[in-house]
Length: 349
Ligand SMILES: Cc1cc2nc3c(=O)[nH]c(=O)nc-3n(C[C@H](O)[C@H](O)[C@H](O)COP(=O)(O)O)c2cc1C
Image 1 (cartoon, rainbow, N blue to C red):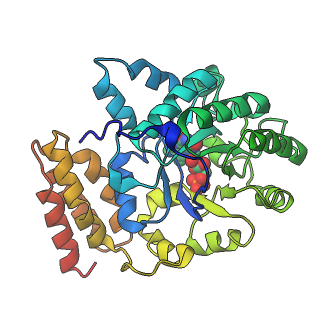
Image 2 (image 1 turned 180 degrees about the vertical axis):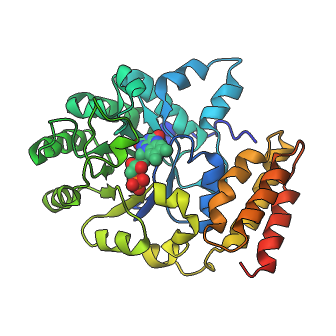
Image 3 (image 1 turned 180 degrees about the horizontal axis):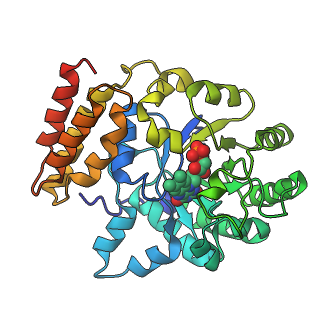
């Protein structure tokens, strides 16, 4: 199911008219893979989806003859996932520019730069959240990616790192990066402790400080500001949307995909499609699963994400077990999902 690079010349694409998205599903390594993104597309057509973080250096290693399978694993997606942003990690403007050029050639809608990841491995590479201490370098990276790709380039960052967590430092970071042309600031509204906390703790221990993100939007109204962190339901998002341009949801989107079924209607004003429910999500995946399996892919990597679709439903445990056994079997195909959808439908789900 390779899509590979498309035919358009990225240099011909003007980087104007950046679409604004009020809702997005956050990039999450090992979770927001291509299969989960197709699942989320059964729930919301309008939201912006992000890839997992892909390191520019890894793309560079695979962008050579004989490595096309590996490149496909890093960049491949199904057109149904669009609008889709490729999140890149790195600190070398040249490598990031080359990766962004490929993003355009492969048909991504946007490039996002990761300045929020605090993991030890990422810190060793001197990128992710530690780049918040180097706004000028981030600006160089953004400018290089935008020039090479012609795509809108956004940045995902924290409100600060370690003791560099004042509003003035945040504003200096944003102003420096905005001057390089970043199209959106997706702000995880807690700082990261680079030493002493692991990535998981860094997503819960430092307190959320939404007020700093609100202040940022208030003082820089011309910038697109997206708030991220701790948003658990639509009502919480709607509250924030009174103060910022957009909201980004991570863990609550993965754990409760159906909770977000009203997003297109309530946040994008698009009431044309019926709201997703459990069986419609599973059935919606069937044609995709068929293409995937026919191209030699296994069903399980798709089915594994369906666990949360029956969250809170009576008999969910049995449904999950049956699905797990059938989808994990050798040679399992899309028919497994069709049957699983029928079972849910029979229960009115
Ligand atoms: C398992 C997991 C993996 C993550 N991977 C990434 C990543 O690849 N890139 C990134 O910018 N953020 C990553 N994040 C952080 C999320 O994008 C988000 O900023 C964070 O979870 C806070 O939002 P939430 O409270 O809505 O989950 C990850 C989070 C989780 C839970």
